[in-house]
Image (cartoon, rainbow, N blue to C red; front, side):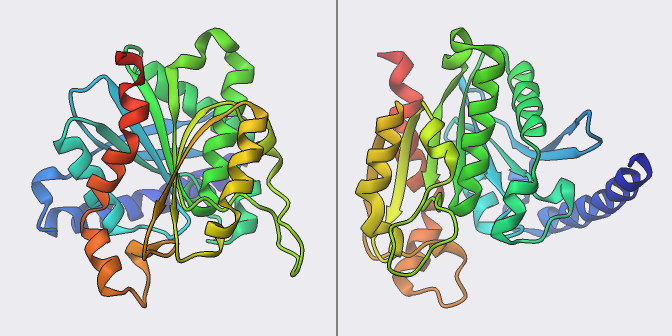
Length: 266
């Protein structure tokens, strides 16, 4: 097992060098992130790209569904420029998992909890908000659920909530039947903001998803994005309206995060 992870770490190092080159060559190189590396007991190495800021909230953006997406990193840099420190973490890469829905269940819960606790320990005086998109949203909810079970309710305020963009939280769909949600949906107790594009299948199930989450004990704010589709900022058939929205992704996220960022200030 250790030799296997050594090979993985070598491959990840090569990938990180390549990414660093891309960052330096980008127009926004002045906002290039630093790396924060977490070596977990399982042997997995989680690498986070940190866009530093001085605020009292850290947004942890869990990615991986689409591979590396420049629009996500640009948005993270924009959020940091406006005072919200943002980390981007690909939680599929440490396990060399393919970009498939089935890969998500192969990320160990104990690794998610250990990683989130390590993030908390590195930011002891700050609140954490999680960000996730599509099917990766389940990883964010699993991480918080396991972390809450481990540390108990007294520590629940450290995680200030989560922003889920076009979340796909259902299991394999059967045509003609209502979706069955990932079990974590009914185990989640968290302040949530959901950005739901109107031009997607999830729009028609938004009320049902909100109801299931609230029944479990979550507080949900649902925001509909007119004229957009799931993954609008990285689609191959992107429309002019989606291109304009992609250019504003950082601001769209900041606006959505305000209820989570400001709730402790009231």
